[in-house]
Length: 251
Image 1 (cartoon, rainbow, N blue to C red):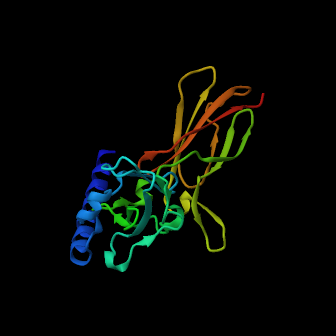
Image 2: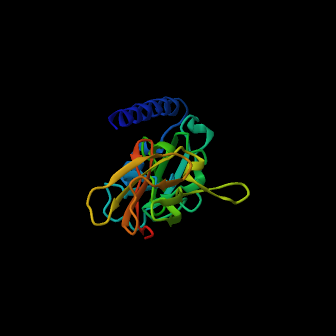
Image 3: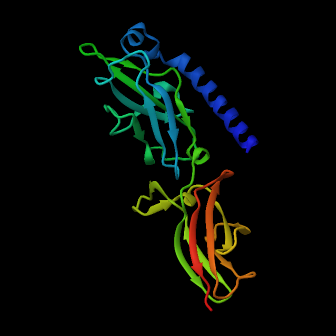
C-alpha cells in the first residue's frame, strides 16, 4: 500500500511540474491579480471522490469573505498533458452554480489519463471578477477510484455447495449504442470471497476470484447449514465495499 501511495504521489508531482511549466509559458492566471484577491479569492478546501470512477469535485467558499451568498462557481477541466491555451472545458451544469460540488461523471472520458480540474469563484456586483486557484486538482480516475458493492446476480445451493455470481458496479459511462458499462470494462478488478457458518465467528477466505464473476464453494460445505458470505472487489490494491449474503444449504 505504501509503494502504491508513494508512486501516486510521485506521478502527481510530475504532472503538476509539467502543468506549471506550460502554464507559466503560455497562460496568465487571473488568480494572481490584486483585484481578485481583494474581491473574494479562489475557492478553498478543494477535494474529490471517485466511487466507481464517477468523480465528484467539492470545495468551500473563498477564505477571505464573510458573505458568500452572491458567489458563483464554474468548474473547468482538461487533460493535464495539454497546454492551458488549448482551452479549458467548462463542465455543463457547473458553469454558473452556487453549489459546493460538481459531478464530472463521464466527462472524464478516458479514466486512464490524468485530468486537471479547476474550480473558479465568480464574484463582484458590478465588475465581475473571476478567481481561480494557482494549481488544479489532478485526478486519475482509474487509480483514484474506489469500488462500491458488487451486484449479486444469482445464488443457488445444494447440500454440499454454494454457487454465487455477480457483476461489477456500474460506471457513469455508456457505450455509443447506449449500453451501460461497468468498472471492469475499464479497469481490471479482482474479487475475494469469505464464508462462515453463522453459528461460528471465524471467516474462511477461499481464494482470489478473477474476471469470471462467479464462484462455487464446495470444500467442507455442510448440508442444512446457514452460511454468511462476504464478497468484495478491489482495484489498484484498494478494497471495495463488501456485500454480505445469508444462505442455507439443502438438507
